[in-house]
Length: 204
Image (cartoon, rainbow, N blue to C red; front, side):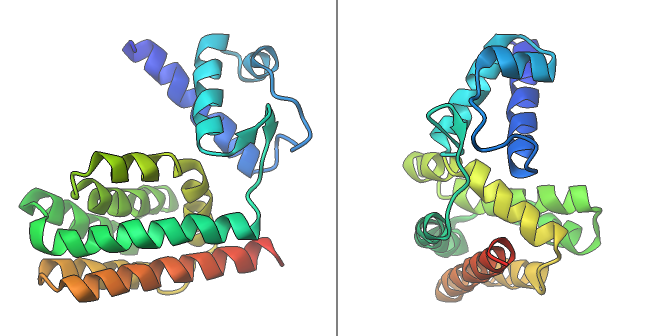
């Protein structure tokens, strides 16, 4: 994909995702390439790719918006706890020095950055840990969940979930000290708290 086309696709994907989660697109609205192209003021080709990505991630079903239920959320986090818990354990022994430094930077930005920087740091922190497993299947599974993970990330950052980055700091420290069991336990507990916080905000 050419750089220009990639930019248009990224814009289409991120804009549609945000409009869905902000409630700007009603769940009953039928999403057609023509309607969305007019709405965003771009061609249908990047819209088609964005829709395909959002369908893969489970946010669009049968050409309509699908907002995950509490049960869906539990299932998603069960998968994340299994995979990211293992990934944190693996990283405790095999993470590269460069990745460890980037992980530390994510923790620091989490404490001191703007909301936008914190959102990105939260994403990158988890992404580094998964990618450092160098397991393409694990990376692909997590990638297919990115839209719903983004919803949770947005919620916990913007609504300031308590101790979010304290937990990141502890996970980083456990990985740095090669304490694989603790790193796994801390990651699982961290994700449990994300789930509990998100469900409490969505259902009340």
